[in-house]
Length: 265
Length: 308
Image 1 (cartoon, rainbow over the protein chains, first blue to last red):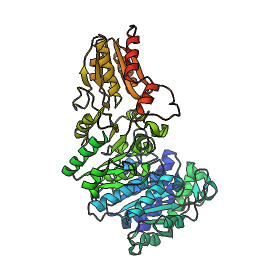
Image 2: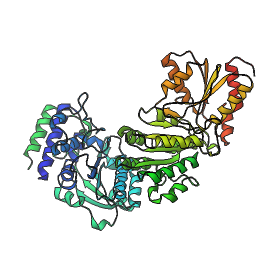
Image 3: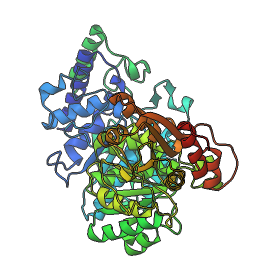
Image 4: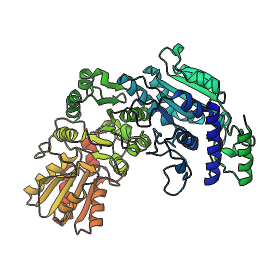
C-alpha cells in the first residue's frame, strides 16, 4: 500500500536524521508522499542498472534522506547502510552523491536536474524507448534561471516523456518563497513556457497517482505537477516552520515526532 | 581548426551513431557540414549554455557521445558548475568544444576571449584537456580523444590555414610534440599562438641560439613524466600561451620543475594583466602581451643574457 510506504519513509527520515543529528528534515518529510507514489505506483525500474528503466532525478538534493529511505524500501540500498547516513566514509551524504545504487544524478546544487532530465527524455526518444523521466524540484529551485532554460528546451522539443514535480511547500532557507522572490502564479508560468501544468495536493496519494500518469490531453507537451505540500508534513510542530528547513531534532522532539508518525492512519 | 574539427567529427559520426553535436547557437559557417550530413543528430539548443551541458549530460548517461560547441568562455565559464557536477563527477563522455582560445576573437572584446579556460579545466582531476596548435593536430587529437572514457575539453582555434612547421598533425596522449631540440633553451607553446613560438625559434637559430620547440597540446592529465624528461635537458624553458599566466601552461611547467626539483629556469610568456578594453586582431593583442615572434626572441635573448 502506498500510504504504508509513505509512513515507512517518514519513519526512516526521523530515525536517521536523529541518529546523525542533521537537519533538512522538513524538506524530506515534504516529499515523502510524492516519493511513495512515484516508487510504489509509477516508476518502472526493474533494477537500478536496467538501461530501459524510467529515470528519477532528485533535483532538490537536500531531500536525499527521503530518497535513501525509498531506495532501501525497494531493496536497492542495504538497510544497514542506511545507518551510515552522514557517517565518516559513508556513501550516503546530506545530498545524493555519485555511485549510490538508484541515484541517477548527484545533486545538491539547485537548478541542474531538469536539464539532465530533458537530455534523458530526448535520449529515450532518440532510442525509440518508451521510458519516462521524472524530476523533482523544490519550489525555490525555480529561482534558478537554468530551470527556465530547461523548461524552454523541453517544450520546444515536445518532450512528453518528461515530468517535472515541484515540491510547492512555500518555504525556502531564509523565508517564505513569496517574500524572498515571488513565484506565483507558478502554474501559469510553466503553462506560458509550453508545459501541461496541474496543481495537486502533494499529500493526496490518489491525486498524485492520477497526475503522474501520462496525460493524453497534454498533446506532446512536457508535464509539470505543482504539488502543494507542507514543510515537515506529518509532524505537527514542524509543519510550515522555517526552523525545520535546517534544524536537527532533540531527543524529546524526536520522541514526539515518531509518536505522531506512528499514530497517523 | 574549426573546419578540420567539424570535418573530422562529421566523418566519425558516419561511423558511430552515438555521436551528437549540440551548439549554443554558434558556429555559423562552421557547423553546416555536420548539420547537413547528420541532421537528426545536430541540435541547436539556443543561447542557453547551462542547459546545453545539462542536456548533454542526460544524453551521455543514456549512451550517447554528445559534443557541445560554443566560443570558449560560453562553453566553459558560463556552465562550469554544470560541467563539474555532471560529466566530471559522473565520468560521463561529454565533449566540450571551445572555439577561439586566447585572443582569436580579438575585435569582439574580453567577453569573447579565452584566457582562463585551461586553468579552470585543468583544476579538475578527471577531464582530458586538449589544446591543439593547428588544424592538422586538431584532426589527430579528435581521432585519438573522441572515444575516451569520461569527459574531454577540446580548445580549438578559428584559423584553418595555420600550419605549425614540422608538427605534421602529430598528437599523442600524455606527451608533448618535440619539433626541435636545443642545448641553451626550450620553448614550450600551447594553442594557436604556437605559430609565434615557431617563428621565434627559427629566428633564434638564425642568431645562433640553440633553442628547441615543443608543443603542449594534451594539458590534462598533465604529461608530467614527458615534461620532466624534456626539462632536465635544458637550463632555460620559456612557456608561450595566449592565456593568463596563472593556471595555464606556464603554471603547469612551474609545478613540474618545483615538484621534481629540476634546475631548469622558467620564463613564462602569457597574459599577466587585464587586457585593455580596445579592439584589435589576435596579433595586435599578442603584441600587447609580449607574445609576437619578435618579442619572444627578445625575451629569450634577454633571459640568456645576450644582447639583441
